[in-house]
Image (cartoon, rainbow, N blue to C red; front, side):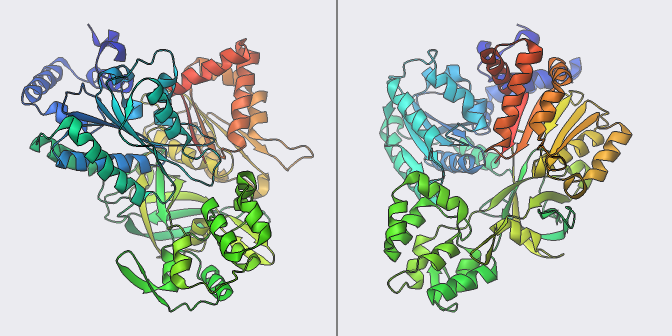
Length: 602
């Protein structure tokens, strides 16, 4: 069989791996091909390839002593949990096959004996991008009976959302329906997942022991260690960088404060690709913390212990606890502490709680629903979740900015009952001065990448701060020497006040780097115009670009914009592609499966 005929159905490789193999071999001359062939044969005979690939996401045929760990992760948490489990399993002597669900060959499923799944839920109960194919396969008639499979699922979610851990629930119920045997009850994790995930690690490895026994594989252990060391700086061990600039890029009369933030990576060695995100740890506002302490009549200097660290209550609230995002458990706990009838009633209604969370912060609970009993520092800390970092789409390419990373940050701000309320991370970055220390890490996003063939046309839809990764895309394409074949749709309220990076886009147009740009400034005329309207106006040209192989990207608000844009795309396919609505849905689903339709929405 030639490589041009090779597919994932005729090999143990997933389709993305097949494509990578084709790309590599296309770049090699006959001498290089012969050398690579000999190298692979030698390493396979030495028993090195299966072990190394097993922990870097290549799905291999597993033996009786193997455990397969798959992860579906939108923000990287699931991948981190799965890798940590792989390390522990290997240390206990098991052969481990660790892979992203997106790189896993679903036809191998019926060969598995032990399958451990870590999966998050995205949007309104949807599977994360890299889990979509496996999720669809299990729900389809093609899914095989799995009577010989033992499995366990750890589901990640956020209880602030309606469909909490829905994807994990889907996997669990579907595997059971196919006859698989559950090793443990489904484990559902909220945002503060670390303790529950650690317990699952211990429980699930104990559960598989009678099934797999023990087989020490020292080479496997070494390969797991090297594979997980992608960077010494991670969410758990971030790099302390310095802010170079935080500059407002909206006009003085704009009702939005959007910042262009540049951060120095120094000698960290941190690298990223266009499309990746930057994880940002932040401190809560001292003003906000003082307001909470005063409202509760608690002393800022009270010494408390969190884990193994002893610190003041004020420092704990500034550095360790989530204050700007509520969650249902906190609303319920505060209702019980305050014994407020209104809040108690509200806390029992999931929909009312979700709406309440969107409009309130913890300081609002303190001010509006005073507790009836004395609340000590330890009790306060026990009801608050740990602070979690925020992810921002990176707005630069290292090909352009080298040891810097750029972000486009909208300050989240509101006023309630005379008090200013801000987003925790956005306020921290907006107020940052040159030299301010910020702890960061890179979160790869393999589901939002430029095409492998740099000449491929790209259509970028990014209103508001959703334009950030497309600035990175353009910097990268210019560095690659690509001219044209790029189309940007951008929108915001006002042309004069809110045209983010206007000068740069105009320069790209002038130089021929950007083929065209269509803008929608919603409030510059009597009727509101959004990017979805521009898509439909340019429907014929848009459809032609897609027919010519263009890749389509959407970044920005998931709640409304992404849905409205998707609907507009469907209407374009119906009008200019002559499709039924059902066929249009199938068309864009095929584009998504082929990584020609990618979203980075939040």
